[in-house]
Structures are given as C-alpha cells and as structure tokens.
Length: 266
Ligand SMILES: [Zn+2]
Ligand SMILES: [Zn+2]
Image (cartoon, rainbow, N blue to C red; front, side):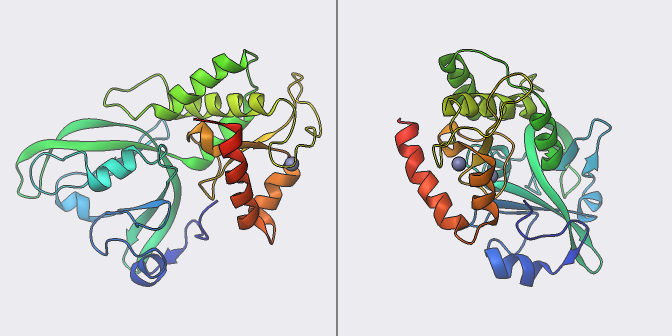
C-alpha cells in the first residue's frame, strides 16, 4: 500500500503532503501527528553538506538522519525512523526534483550506523546513517518462505522479541525479514486454522500442510514488515480483501482491532 502515492510520480510537497498530513513544512524528516506515517525526503541538499544518501549493492538505501550542526541526536525525526515499525508507522520516501518531489516508495528501517561525516559548517561529527529497504521486497521475501512448525508458545516468544527489537547500531543478523517472518509465523499459528476475523476455517492448506491465512497489520494501511503481534491478525483471503478493498473496510478494521484485544491479552 502506497497511501495513494504512485511511484515515480512528481508531487507538490506543500499541497500533496502537508495539505493532507500536515507535519513540519521544513526539513528532511516529517512526522505528522495524526497519521501513521513518517515522510522522508532525499535530494541534492545533502551533497552540499558533504554527505549523500545512496543505494548499496545489497538493496539497502543509506539515509542520513537530521541534525545540521554537531553530533546527530537520537530524537524527533531520527527516533521516528528508528522506531517506525514498533509504532506501526509507514516510512514514505520522496526524492527532491526540480519540479517537485518524486514518490520513491515505502521503506522499512533495518537498523542504523553511526558514521563520521561533516556537518553544515564542515566540522566532522557523528551522523546516523539509516539502513532502509523497500517495503515491497520485504513483503515478497517473507511471503515466499514457509512457516517453520514449532510450539505456539515458542513462536509467541519469538514474535514479541521481534516486535520489540529496535534497530541497533551494529549490523544485526536479526534482519527485518526474520523479524517479519517470526511475527507472521506466530500470528498464523495463533489462528489455529481459523480466520481470526470471521472464524471460518482457512480455505486451503499450504504445500507444507499449514492452513493458509494472511497476516494483516491493523494499525497500518500496509502489510509486511515487523509490528507488534497484538496488532497483527490472521485473516482468510476474503476478510483480508474486505479490509483493504471493501466499502466497509475501515469499519471492519475497527472491528478487528476490538477482536484483537480479546485474542491477545496483555
Ligand atoms: Zn475471514
Ligand atoms: Zn492487510
């Protein structure tokens, strides 16, 4: 889900972004108060300051945090990027173009490094470099892996650990893929072969014998990536399409949220 933005299309920052979400009109990281999004901008401005956001060969986009003078601090926009998954927020990337801002897609933060880089005055300081990966890639990879059969309690412990893992400074083996998979495996196992929305049996089995259910992130418009298992529900394909495409999708989502408080207590 792209929040209605089309990848590659040019938008007007003031009208299309602030007109819709409010949020800080200046700066590279926008954290609207009333919407579950973190909007980030990348462009030529960074180069003038001596650093550049860039794509790495492994598919990660390196994004410099905010803070123009002195060491960067893990607060405000930087904190919003690092913790977006924990708070159920989508990161939307826009590239600054001469004619406006181009939508580059939804991203997931895998972690961050601290790197020495010049600040606006040319003095070396500690800068945060966030490691972002396109959301679609995460969803595709997670969807292709089959759940490992284990005890529900074991899966639950792993899922909550994955949800609470905040991106670390050191590259961690617990990548966003693994965290997403842990949460999906647990939620599907929790469903115990039945849709947690309509209570009907899963319509068919996967090739490994596990009932087919889809994880839906109740707090977000988009699925995939880590989130708190208390806000991820196992749905049959019918219920899932109803939430995303149905006329009553948002009220149905509200109903699911109420159901979840009974399913996942505490
Ligand atoms: Zn259902
Ligand atoms: Zn969904």
